[in-house]
Length: 222
Image (tube, rainbow, N blue to C red):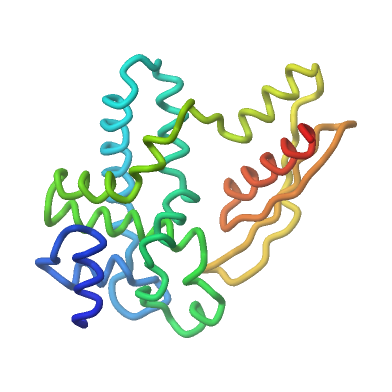
């Protein structure tokens, strides 16, 4: 591991790696030689959920479970994790195969989000829950504290909007899937039959549905 990468990890995560190979794995895509980030991402996803759940429980003591769940879902989503990845500068440190890099995997929401969770998993293994909590609170701080109200997921909000208007419920369909296997792009359409429709893109079906719902809400409310 280079000194530059070691310094970046220490400054970004608040932890100096004791086993550098673990953090190299957290930054390694399946297209590259060596162990990939997938197992660490599995662990980090669970750690992030625990840390965020604990934080929200303490931060919003009067909110019911439903509101806390909506906050949690927004804060641990792949989109949010990818935003964190961009902010802390994950992209340049990713270890990618040539084709994956040529295909722009270093900019993929799917990849960046998974790598952030893998880094959380790596910190947890070395520094325990306290170390993981410190990184998550530093990286997510403003997002949690500036949430004035529990956000609704765009798909849930669109469903409620249609019901309030006594319209038929929204219908989602995959329009197309493009790109390589390791960095796919899904295009999804959503339609409220007889009313309006919109389209959304994402690196997963769920992400594309979310973007489509957000686009249709914007159109209906304009």
